[in-house]
Image (cartoon, rainbow, N blue to C red; front, side, top):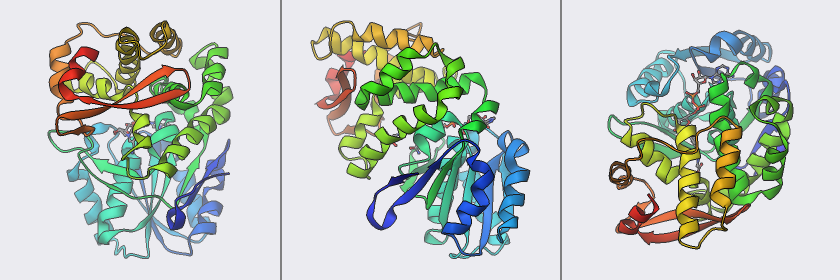
Length: 351
Ligand code: NAD
Ligand code: GLY
């Protein structure tokens, strides 16, 4: 059992095969009898929903459920509003709680609604995508997208616990598994050389599931350390953005079509390191090594056509921009990320 140590906001992470079968008992250890709203999506609920509902009821909880259409479009204020109405209609009070069962969309939305309805209800995350299991379910960033920008509306709110069952990855589409691996590779690059060696020793995506507990645990330990040191994303936690500034710029310049988030992060890590190598900040040959690694896990290392002007324009709206400066993450060598503050205008030379 891992624990995120944040004083009175500390919480456990249960990471083990078939953990989902223990959900009711695990929740009952944390919460007294209460009403629970299980929030899930149209892909995940049909696979896991019935068993989860039955198990929670067996452990004395009164459970209602709400299923949203799968996909990023549902991460909106409109869906949040529907959930607020659903909770009101079901007489949810501050002593009741939410559980999010699904990928990062469900986790971010559930956390956001839980932290804003009646100024805050308790919630638990049950992430079912690799990206959510290694990244979004822990650390307390919640949120929805506005019409114009991703993740622009949100809160910092820590869950009461996170239950991770890697066997749920068996039903996750391969391209989604690859997307999660972009975040795992990132964790290895910024802080964990052993994880990098492990990823090197595996033959590719087909070997992720048999090794999922140890891969997820290592990635979580990287995030745990950074979240504990910097809950509100002001210093060390920014390391988790390696590859993301260019990645977000690329996604936005493509209007969130033609490229997925994980693909964009993979390309961002390679491009950032190529530029850092040219400037003498990263070891020679590192960009090529990262490129080989992302390709092994079925992620792209480049994008054509590369439109640096459009990517730069999109980066001007990045949350890491502070006035005329931007904080960027560079990896000088495997396992060692660094944060550099540079002039925003200088970022063009990284593209
Ligand atoms: P997602 O929630 O859309 O899930 C991806 C797809 O996989 C969906 O179609 C979903 O229905 C399906 N799915 C999930 N688990 C499944 C399973 N076990 N079996 C079958 N299908 C399954 O997206 P995601 O990639 O999990 O997360 C992306 C979201 O996470 C984005 O909105 C991003 O902004 C957010 N995010 C948040 C943080 C944070 O710190 N809060 C960090 C990274 C990303
Ligand atoms: N996904 C980046 C963070 O949680 O800070």
